[in-house]
Length: 498
Image (cartoon, rainbow, N blue to C red; front, side, top):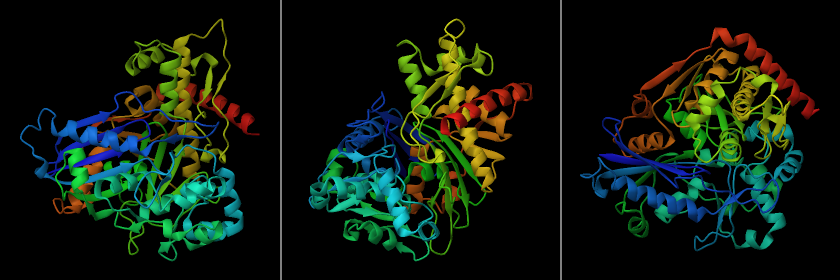
């Protein structure tokens, strides 16, 4: 039996076809080949067309079923599908399931003030103790923004959902959501174990717009006749798993028990640790959400540090600083030709919307110390890689303050952690050992779907078989020079913040 996993990102849709019994990855695909764009009608806004995500889901599915190695696999052999998706977005659909307006995605900053006002109205301690987060810039605040600024669109909408909920809707025809999804939208009350009435009432939002809840891991629905015709899947295929990309990435790396930690460096960067307590950061520099295996009887909370400006900053440097023939491997070699600290050139990579760990400040990216007589393109590339790594270190120190153990971090093999320089910088400055695993979010979603369909006994069995491709440990020879470079970078950030 086989399963398919989807990872619905803001840059692309990735998909994997997996043999459940062995965990063997038969094929992996991505669409589009170049990154999807984001629309920014105003500064600080970010929108995408949800129908575009579904189009790429259909393309990926067709490519998987036609890929080398899958010649003997029929659509009827696909037992289930699983969905990982970009978190915190808002998709509105009408009663006929048509999209009402473009999705307001995770890095859109328009609702920060809306969420802050609601936080004060609800009561900070009350909101945090029940929901673990401020409405901040999350889905609830984005929905309230639409209600205030686009009342016609709010009235037309029948369902407010997360991006993964929309893909499940298109596959099944049924509007559903999960506790994990509601918690990432700050729409779940952990004390009362139901939708967060304190947030809905405090914001004046219509609770009827929330979708029917289904388990994050379990039977969520089945592929409809229409979706089967569009994707190539068999009608009736089980939709068995759904989670936001960061909980999903952590689960894919077998981070499911308290004390385990994962990280990723995609468009945004994340460090994600699991705890068995209803923990929250009063300063909201990091956030807490229901993990994929959280239940009323088993508390599993993911503490998430998110940095918006990571992979997108690396991509921007490749596109705007390097020539069209330069790949990421070329950039790694360029950076290696420059000393640690980039000869005094520092890059603050915060150019992708408000940064939660900086108090939802939208600083914009900053290039500091540029010397026209000294610095080259290679310096710019290294400063970019170091700047993103330093941002990780800055945030990880916040997590350590909150008691998260960071001695070992598991990462996938398909993002910025492919850069040895990037990973080594983080390892050396934090003292953490970094394990690079041969998996990604799409593979994890496929394996989890196999559990839901009864083809694997549990999550630990399903995802515990990955190969560790390499282990990165601190480099003693660079410790002092990296420490000096980081302190200068942090001082520049502190001056900018204050």
